[in-house]
Image 1 (cartoon, rainbow, N blue to C red):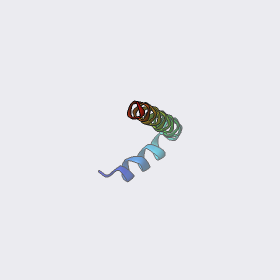
Image 2 (image 1 turned 90 degrees about the vertical axis):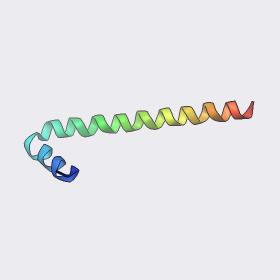
Image 3 (image 1 turned 180 degrees about the vertical axis):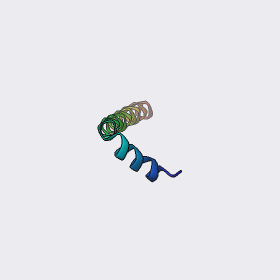
Image 4 (image 1 turned 60 degrees about the vertical axis):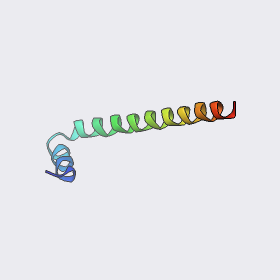
Length: 49
């Protein structure tokens, strides 16, 4: 079963949970991006020293 089919089933069978899942994954993506930026900043500081 491919991911597209799984997503369609979730949206059809559990629409409110699909929204919750989408919002949660967006937050995870944003948090990971922030962490990566922080890591890059720390690496740049370490390199500069």
